[in-house]
Image (tube, rainbow over all chains, first blue to last red; front, side, top):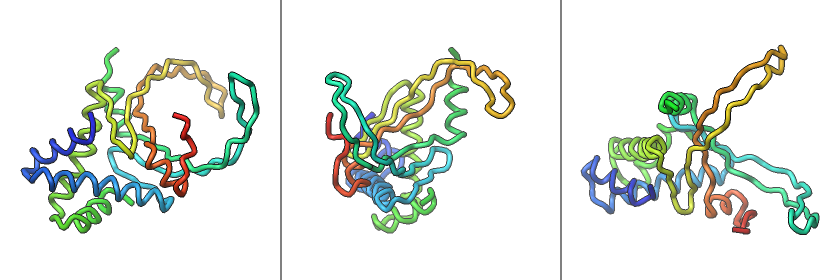
Length: 95
Length: 99
């Protein structure tokens, strides 16, 4: 599934134009990214939470050449699925 | 920011009623959940991708009591940030450009 599928689904379910549905999705993504850029978490109940974590610099090694190099400090975006969703998935799998 | 704040911001940013924004937000996240449940993965350019990751069963220990606990195999949603999002939180620098 890609973005266009979601836009199409919103268009059909809400009965709005393709342009309007597209604007909803693009703006939604922009708002979430903008919030994370400010290093603020985004919490969607029933879905999960995104947080930005700070990683310190550390020494890495190229596994092929065994050469050591410094991995620069960076920020990473981490997603934590909600407990509700975790349970829905574990109830889903019967294997 | 939580879901109701996102809905409010979205409605203001797009000049749409709260009802439309709420509908869009709910459909957006429900579609992702449904796709993963159906065994599909979700790729949103510039934002990231969602997939289900499987974890094998293992015998762990309760770190407090030392008691053995069996953890059955499970599947969990996993999100990987896309290039644009990675760059944005790092002030424009892509720290993982090796792909």
